[in-house]
Length: 82
Length: 429
Image 1 (tube, each protein chain N blue to C red):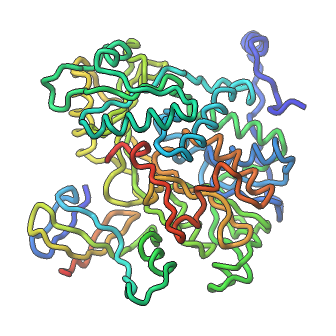
Image 2 (image 1 turned 90 degrees about the vertical axis):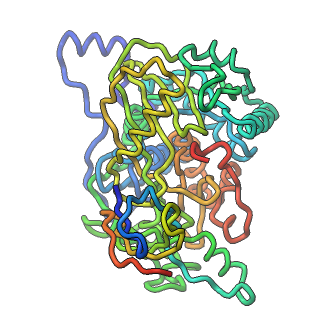
C-alpha cells in the first residue's frame, strides 16, 4: 500500500486517488515549437528516487495536489494543494 | 559449425544418467575486455537475443552483454510466458507474427527444449464495444494471413469448458477472439537457450556488471551527450569499457540508462503483478484473456494456473505486491471460472514494465550516433523477444533501422506518428 497524504483529506491509500504522473513545465502553446510541445507531451524523466507528481483526490475532495514520492521506496512527503 | 556448442540429445541424457557425469556449464564467466564492437546493456531475453542474432546472422562476435544482476532476472523470468500475434495494427501484426515463427523453430535452432505449447489463445469480450474491437482485430489479422477469428460463447465453452458462459454473471461472455497459433513457452529456457548459443559464438556475458554512465562525445548536452553526439563506451562498476555501439535493452530501467546518454524516453515504469496457484490436474487447454476483467490465465505443464493482471496504476521501481491485486485477481478469476474457488495461490510476484503512451515499443537508432534502444516493451516484451533481437541485430549491423521496426523508432514521438496498440496490447483498458 502506498500512503498518499491529500492536503485536504489527510492520508489515504493510493487506490483512493488517481496518479497523474510527474509534474512537468508546460510550454506556451502559442510560441512552442512542435518538438518542444511533443517533448512536453510524451517525454518523462522517470527517475528512480524522489519525484514531484500530481494526484487527483477522486473519492474525496476531488481536487488536484502535488506530492513528492520516492519511486524506489514509495515513501511520500511534502504534499501541497495546487 | 553447430550454433550451440555441446549438443543435447536423448543419447546424452542416457549417458549422463548412467555415468552421473556433470553436464558442461551452459555459458562461461569471462573476464571483461577493455573494448568491444557492441555493448548490450541488459542480460535478459532481448539483450541475449540481440547478441545471438548479431553473432549468428551478421558474424559480429566481439560483443558484451552486461547485466547488473544475473541473466534473465528481470522481466524475462517474471512474465506469464504467453505468445501470440493477433495484434490490432498492421505494423504490430507483422512484427509479432515473425516472433511467433521464430519461437516455433527455436527448440531446433537453439538445441534446447523451450517447451512451446501451441495451445490456442482466447481473448474474451464482455461488452459490445469489446466485441467490436475483436471483429476489427480479426479482420486486420486475416488480411495479413493470421489464423484469428471471432467465436460465440458456445464455441468458447468448447475450447475452455471450465469458463462460465451463462448470461447472468456480472460480466457475461459475449464472444471471444480465438487465435489458435498462440500459446505458452517456458521463458527461462528461452533465456538459457540464447545465452548458451551466444556464448558458444564468442559473446561475453558479464553478470553483476552495472552500467553507471554512458560515455559520449560531440553532443549538444553536458559531457558531449545528447543530440548530435556519438557513443564512445560505458562506465561500469568494474571499470570503463569502450565501444562504438551501445544498446539499451533494460526494460523497466530503460529511462535510467537512456538518460545517461542524454536521450529522454517517453516511458514510465510500472510494476505488473502475477501469481501462481498450487498445481492440479490439467483442465484448461487454452490461454484465456479478459480485458474487461483485467486478467489472463494459463495452465502450465506442471498444472499450476498462472495469472497475470494489468499494470499497477502508480509508476514505481518497487516490486512488492499489494493486497488489492490479490483480492481483485481472485474475484475476477472466479467470475470466469467459479469451479476453482477451492484452489490456493502459492506465490505472487511482480516485474517492471516500461510503458509508452501508445503501447508500442521504442526501437532502433536514436539522435545519438551508436546508441540504440530496444525499450518500451510494456507488457508484451516476452512475446516479441526473438524478433526484437533479430531486427535490432540487423539495425546495429547495418546502421539502418530494419523495415519491421521502422514504425517503432523514437522519431514517431517528435513527428506525432504514434502506433496505437492499446486495443490489443493492454489488458487494462
